[in-house]
Image (cartoon, rainbow, N blue to C red; front, side, top):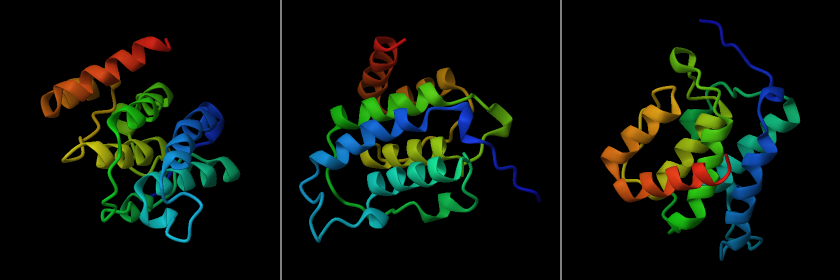
Length: 152
């Protein structure tokens, strides 16, 4: 199986980094000895995006297996929604060519882990994603849809 590594110049990684950095800046552990980005779901997403920006790539083979699952910090939904919305805006709607190792998908999965009881299998379409999200949590789906409408 060959892995296609796509160029990051087709999306704005910076647009996704900014809201994640805001979440980090507001974390009580940020810039302390207890801050462990590799064990933090937001820190992992941020580091993945920064790595992709540095390398000029979108796909990090095998990265989805390393998403931290033991991060038990409380995240406010209102802080996560703008970052989640940005992943939707940057998504290229790959449909059948969707890769869970794409930094957009990695970031979305990390953000879902912060506010949802289970991840949503991404259908490769933002509209279909919102429909699946609505089945799991109507309030979060509405917040995300509202956030997406704000910056069209």
